[in-house]
Length: 603
Image (tube, rainbow, N blue to C red; front, side, top):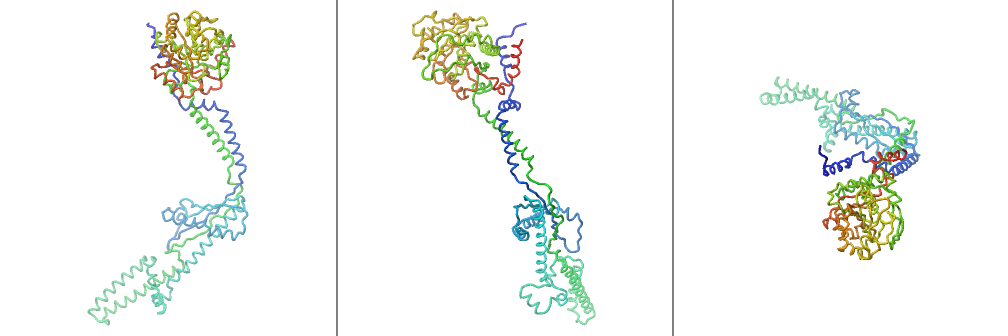
């Protein structure tokens, strides 16, 4: 069986480290990570909803139901279903819309106010037609249940009364145009009345004859047809015979009989019209079906519903705010952020270790503290979580490219305090633990710091070698408790870029590469300092260290673009200072390991 190749191991390694694609469930850790903000906003919003609902007055609603019936022509009968289940037509919509406007209009409101006197409460009126019926429901809402019922009943009473008065007024007006029995018998009334009507351009008999109840009557239609036929026969016989001829006389007698029958039938229909004018002219019948009762409990506000609504609005608003803040956060925090923004392999996380943080220096001038500092060797040996994280980064680096192309590894960052010196030292120590000969070079000549991590003194270092004040043997120092070797920064130089650009620096790297398996170089942040770009032409692999939540994605992209311009691609990115405890929502997969190290310590 053949052993897997390095390329196969590399491919499998990166496949295992790939995170699952983002989904809805990925939002849950983000929400939990900001649970304090979510709870605060939700409690505040709910408290405001409780206060607001408590301040609202109780409102009482009651109403009346009014039948507004469009009567059918005389002689037709309507069942209960005809009234309550009539099909809705466009004409009905217009008609009932008009009635609703009347019942809620200013005229009836003024009449209600006039008859009830001073109403001590403000109120609102609403009316609508019950679906597929001829019933209008009118409701009144106010802060007093008794006044709500009183006002609603008064609206219904006045609407019915005014509708009746309007109908009577219309009846009286129409009666002036309908001939009575005497006028029909006299052929339209006295001669003077007929003359007056003719002068006004109106004839009662002609108007009566045009009413649909008369024109559509089958008896009248038959009599009129017979009359027309007889008149035609009389005209035809009159051309040949005299009026005294028996045939002509018989037709004339029959014609008089038909006229008498027409008059009797017309008189009967007109009498019915005068008795009930609701037929041809569609006068409405209006009456109250149900009076308004005094409501026993308020209809508004629905306080439990309002408070629940406020709770959910606050909850979802807080969640939305958290997601917006998370989306607006353009810092590099997770491997996804690093890969999407830089399009380079992700090499791993390094957790935050407080005793490895650099002490704050004077901002105006940096004077490194000589003498022993933090012993990073002991920290790495005693912190299992840190050791495993660094080992993971080491594994990614070793399999990132062939050995010949990764002997010289450079660590840099975008801005200061991201921990690139810490990561460089940790990786160098981890490589040395594998039995490799490893040299760590502090090429951050502006602020050399590695000697403090390794409990060494910075008497002579890289600067001293580059300016010719020390030999290579003098600047290479051994690290206690490890096979790691260190070249410290040495004396502070005013022109570090020129020193790193010198041929002597390239000669140094070539020389040490023959004696060491790996050379790890720590260089200054690259955003505004060119030292890293100068060193890049001498090394094989460049690694960018990003402090968790410290660097904007656009800034990191600018840094990567600087290396792309000089033709030196970064082999990957390491995210440093990861606070798993405070940001478990970002590193939610780590939660499965959190108790693993705790149990290990108890054994």
